[in-house]
Image (cartoon, rainbow, N blue to C red; front, side, top):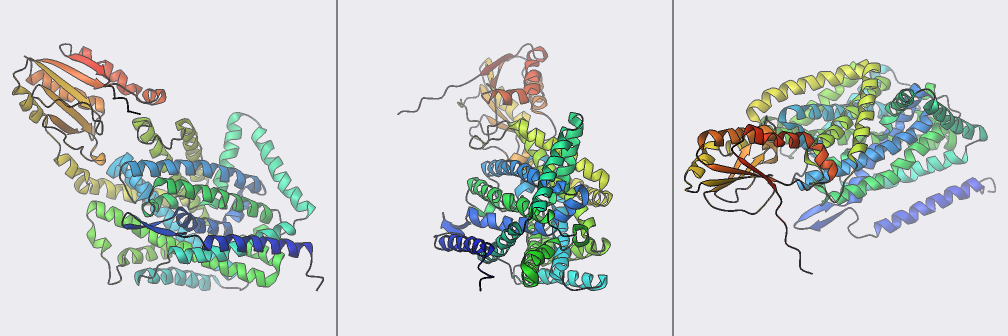
Length: 620
C-alpha cells in the first residue's frame, strides 16, 4: 500500500479533485451551453469556445513531432512564441466578427468578410484556401487517428488505407443520415478529455529529470542566440522559420468566427478567444515542452509520439486510454471538417444560385456535398500515401494562406474605411500590418520549401478563381443591387425642373445622414459599393450611384462632368463632408483627399465647400 502513497500520487489526486470540483461547479450553472433570447436559441461563448478547443486539441497528436522534424528542440521555445503570435491574430478575428455584425452579416465567417472586402471574384481565393484547409484537416486527422489508435498494432499500408477510408466514409454516412454531434455531446467529450490530458501533463511533469529540464533550457538559449545572431533580416528569417514550423499546433482558431452566427454578439466571440488563450494557449506549449524534452526517440515515433509518451509515464493501460481518446478527438475533427465545408458550400451556392448542389435528402442533409467531400478526402489520402509528413506540409501552407487572406482583408478594410465601423473594439493597424508581413513571409518560406503543399494550394485556388471569374460575371448578387441604382439623367431631370439659379450638390457617405433639404434646387448623392447594398432612399432628391469598378474620386468627377455639360447656365455649389475620423484614418485616405483638392482646377466655375454640420448637445 505504501508504494502507492507517494508524493506523485497525492499530486495527481489533488489535480483530479480540483478538476472534479471545477466541472461540478460548471454543471450547476444555468444556461451553461445555450440560452433562449429574442425568440431564438443562442450558444454561449463557452459552448463555441469548447467546439474550437476540441479542434485545436487534435493538433497535439501530430504538430509537436512535425515541428521537431524541422527545427529540433528549438520547437519547445517556438511553440510558445507561436502561441503568443496566434493570440495576437485572434484579436484580429474578434475585430472581423465585430465588423460583420456591424454590417448585419450573420454566418459565413471569414468567407463573408473576404466577400465584403474583395468582391465576388477575388473572394474565391478565400473560398479555395478555406476549402483546402478543411480538406487537409479531415485528411491529416484521419491519418493521425489511425496512427495513434493503432499504435500498439502492426498494420500494412493497405490495411491502414482501408481503415482510413472507413473512417472517412463512416463520418460521411453519419452526416448523410443526419446524425450530428451537438454542444452537449462535445462538452461531455471535453470533460473526459480534460481529465485524461491534464493527468498526462501532470504525470509528464512529475517524471521530468534534471537532464529534461536542461533540454528545455537549451531550447530557449538556442532560440535567443539565433535571434541575436547577425542582422535584423537574419533574426526575422529565423523567427519566420520557427513560426512556420509550429503553426500546425494552433490549427482551427478560425472556427470561432465561422460559428459567430450561433452567438448573440461579437462580444461572445471575444470571450471565446480569451478562453482559448488561457486553455490551449497554455496547455499545448507546456505539453509540447514536456514531450519533446523526454527520453523518447522522437524520430522513431513521429506518428504516435503522444501515445508513446503516455505509455512511458503511465504504463501501457494509460497509453491505450490516450490512444482511444486521440482517435475520438481526431474523428470529431473530421466531422467538423464535413460540417464546416458543407456550410461554406451551402452559403456560396445560395449566393450564386447553384441550388442543385445543396439539395437535401429526407433527413435534411446536404448529402451531395458530403459525398463529394468524402471522395475528395479519400483521393488526397490515396495520392499522398497516407503520409502525415506530406499532409502536414500541405496543411501548414493552407493554414498560413488562410490567415494571410483574413489579415490582408482586414488591412484593406481598415485603411479604406477607418475606425468608423468598430469603435467598441479596435486593434492597431500598424500591428496588423506587421502580422501580415510575418504571415506572408511564412507563406513564401513554406511555398519554397514545401513544393507539394504549394502545388495543391495553387491548383485548387486556380480552379476556384476560374469558376469565380466566370460565375461572378453572370450570377453575382451585386447585379441586383446595380439594377436598382439611379441614373445620372434622373438627377439631371430633377435639377432642370428647378427655377433656382443656384443649385447645391451634397455628397454623402452611404450611411451618413446629414441635414436633408427636400427641394428641386438641391441633390443629395450617395456613392456606394454594390457589395454593401444600396442605401435607403430618404428623399426624392436623394440619388444612389453604384461605384463598382471605379474609385470614389472617379465617381465624383463623372457626375460633375455630367452636371457641367448638361447645366451650363446654372451656378452650382458642391458640398463635401468634413473628415471626422482619427488622424491615422485621414492619413489612410490621404490619396483620395489629394484627388478631391484637384476638383476646383477641373471645374473652375463650380463652388466647392467642405463642411461639417454640428450635432445638438444631449440633455443631461
